[in-house]
Image 1 (cartoon, rainbow, N blue to C red):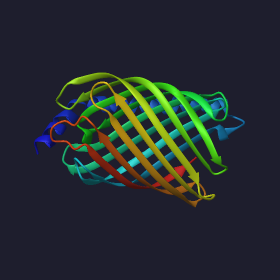
Image 2: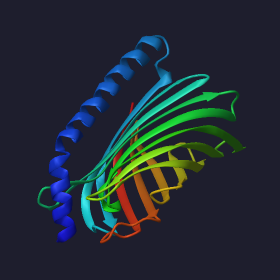
Image 3: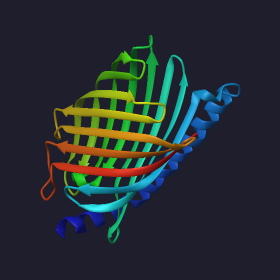
Image 4: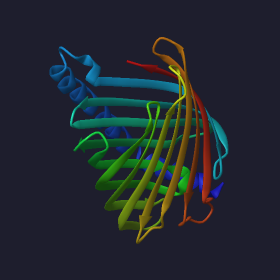
Length: 257
């Protein structure tokens, strides 16, 4: 209960910040969409968007059932690839504790050819089950894509960068990080896709963070999909009362545009 009270007080203090972040996110979506539309009047295949809604089960610090949304906006105009994603988990079990996770992430890549690219990645993460009020990552690096077959590919990314983070009710850390990310995509058939993504943030202060995302999706009709997600998170620095391992299992209905 002591942890829950700390979380409630922290959420009250930062409620205005969350509102501002929502405003910035949707402002970016509007601007990004406007720019993309202006550049793709004759070829709207360059612009893709997705909206997902579903239920999740979490284990670890705060076991619970909750609802979630996973949304994204992609724009590709070779050699540039851009992606903005938004993840939100809403919970009702703990009075004023209204959410478990809030993530916004923007990635911009420049491709030298079909398999080599440089990229900039920025991520804002408020995942309260970790014990941190927020984490902000900024990384710039190099990626290499491996074409295994027509329907299968893998990639590896390496990116040094910076991180700012604050423990709930505790100290602030500013650290140097190295991000290592591995991706695997397999298109089993026209409607079924499998994805595995493992991300590591190694830091000189504030502990390191590891994340695994497994996704299996299948088409229902036209641009409507059902997707199953399994996420595993582990951190080496754990505030008192929190657990190092947390998992999120989700099933969503996704609509692609």
